[in-house]
Image (cartoon, rainbow, N blue to C red; front, top):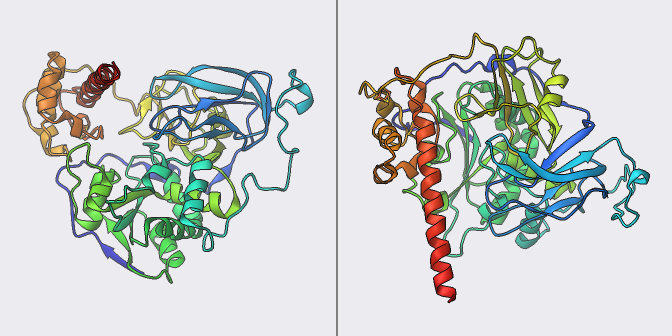
Length: 470
Ligand code: SF4
Ligand code: SF4
């Protein structure tokens, strides 16, 4: 297994304060199951899962709560035993509302009021949730089925259903399987700890994915500020067969973006949407997701929990916490010793692409990589001013866009002009807003424009389908 420096460096990008030292040396710690879980049916990209339980049901850990509901969707399973108190709309970190199962994990099966409640396996059953598979003997179809029934989606943030990613159309071939271990977001160290502590599981996940994808070459992308992770991966992959390489990337935000990772590792450029990585022969997967695939296949363990970095200068004890999906932020914070001081801002995710949240009653999902509590000293209060045409945002944009023009167009209500300026290419990385001396909310303008355009396209499609059905 070779380790080499990346030969390709993308244009643009920024260098925010990384602040990873707060949690990078904290080994992954499993937190006890909280008394109440809020398990969203929308933990992934695509259609929310269809809820199949009701208030009064007693459910077991691993039981399906929501079924996959379309091609771009994944199932949702219970991350602990518990009594379904309610199924109701709850707000997610990004602000949207979705059905969620509210689970009382302190209840016992006897407390279920509904005598007809489904009766899953006994508590503390030694039987794995799904039957373990020997990946070497299993067929490609069996492995894909397992990834699907385990409810696995990309854990790097986007939440794209993994079974879809692993099923390229017959006319497209995966030449490179790229593992995303860049973790370029400030403060976050969850992937770093997974690479350090679970490199052997990542290795098994790679072998499984390689088998499913037809033995592509492997590239593992890690930023150079994680030498311990690189050493752990070198050891775990020392005897891997075929074309495989660890690619050491320079520290540059947003190095972890899928498109930039493909360029950095194999020098290929993904064309404009709707083109996908597979159109240039690549499949990119986050390192945590790859380890989850290994657990789902070899151990029969669906994706029920994940590592989340809880950090920032306003949390008492920054940690990398292994928590069940559906853990409320307030419980995560309590597990980390509570607040050191009242935070001025709570962010779900990293400081560049994460979402500031107004409530710690919001719960984690399969994609919650971080929870940050920042004191007033770390939060800059600003008022946006007019653009001074300094061009800094243009230099920072890793997609080669003109963020200043796009944001002015959106502010003027001219979404068409933003569309013509390729706003749909924007990866919402925040590099433009980061350096803007006028503190303009450029990224938010791009997000608004993209949402408007997507809604228009969906309405046009629905209209065309209705016309065709007449
Ligand atoms: S315009 Fe989009 S892609 Fe370019 S820097 Fe801003 S957020 Fe990133
Ligand atoms: S960085 Fe800000 S002020 Fe400078 S050109 Fe971009 S939007 Fe205008």
